[in-house]
Image 1: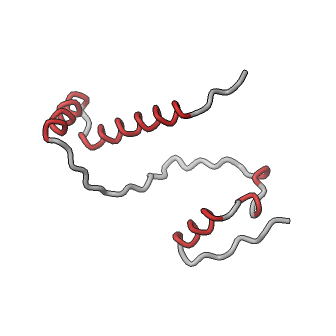
Image 2 (image 1 turned 30 degrees about the horizontal axis):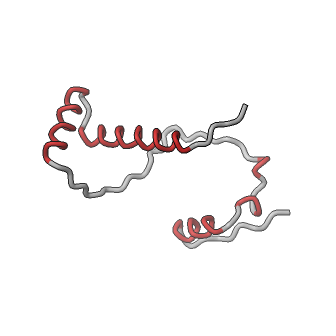
Image 3 (image 1 turned 90 degrees about the vertical axis):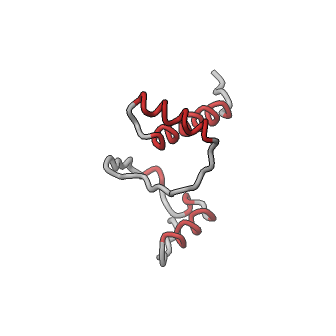
Length: 95
């Protein structure tokens, strides 16, 4: 029998709870089903980023050549680099 999931006042409280708990004590993951949410838009947060003007000019030029907004191109570049770094950290699986 698994533990009962408490009621939460808000998402922050729930987030805090799950960051400190082992979900296997509350859920039977063997019974879980995959769910797809194709129209779900990821939440975003605005940040301020200082860049050298020459770098920003180059980004704008590259974005213009690809016909995308320069901020979108920055996100693409960041995502690609993060994936590359994470992939290089993984320990190769033994065969």
